[in-house]
Each structure stands twice: as structure tokens, then as C-alpha cells.
Length: 188
Image (tube, rainbow, N blue to C red; front, side, top):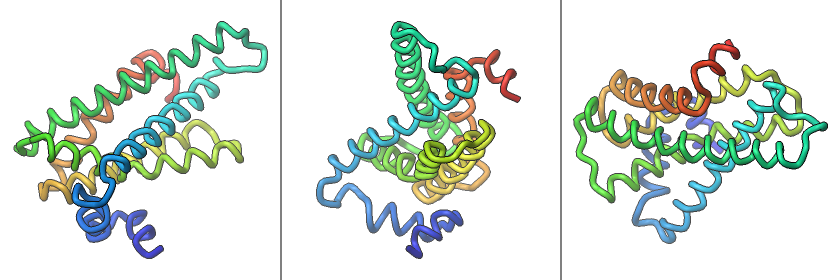
């Protein structure tokens, strides 16, 4: 419980303990944990996209079956394309801004660090029970961004401002790809 509180408070020692001691490639069933984390990450991201569509008024009880299928196809495409862009830009910005070399084993560590540090997305589940404004989704996104930044700092031992820049570039381009410029301006 103390580690969870320290993770919420963004303590680098807690992230270091979690990423190097508790969860690493030498842990039993690392590959299984990685795939489960990817699935949970994508599922929560799809739910986030569904919440945004519902708040835009594109989702209602009077929708036909074909429009529901079309909406789910849009969500799936948004999630996969957005996360592909996120990880590509994330790795590219790490290479350029942090001057780190990226091997396959290092890529797995970085992927796991991003997945684990995105644990704030679990708070999206609270929107199933309580009604929240759409601004809460963006607050959760900011917490995920800051948590990813701390995890990147721990994994790479780089300066915090460079980690912020790398994470911000990746998150901004993901938002631009999934939401589009017209839909972003409508929300703010």
C-alpha cells in the first residue's frame, strides 16, 4: 500500500523499486505480464475514447446497429493508430532528446515502464459508476503524462525536462491523430 501511495505521489524511488525490483525481464512470466498489461492498456484507452464520443453526443440510445458498429470501428482504429503513433514518437523522441540507444530488450523495458506508469487510466472505471464531466478525462491524461515522465526518468536516468519533452511530444501527437484538430478545438 505504501508503494501505491508513493507511486501516486510520483516518488522516483517507488518507480525505481517497481520497475527494477518487482517487474523486470528476469521476473517469472514476464512475457505474460507484458501481454496482459498491453491488453488492459488498450482496453482502458478504448473506454476513454468511448467516453469522449459519448460526451460529444455521438452516442445515444436511438442509434442504429450500423452506427454502433461504425462507432466501435472508429474507436478501435483510434486506439490502435493512436497508440502506434504514441510509441513510435515516444521511441523517436527518446532517441533524439535523450540520446539513448534502443535495443529490443531495452524496448521491452520501456514499453513495460509506459504501461505500468499509465495506471492512472484505471480511474476511468469510476466513470462507470459516477457521472463526471469530460474534463476529468483530460485530468487523468495529465496524470498519465506526468507518471510516464517519472517512469522514463527512472528508466533512462535522464534530465526531467528532456523526459517531459519526450513524453509531451508523444502524447500531443497521439491526441492530434486520435482526436483531430477540429474535435480538439470543440472540446476546449
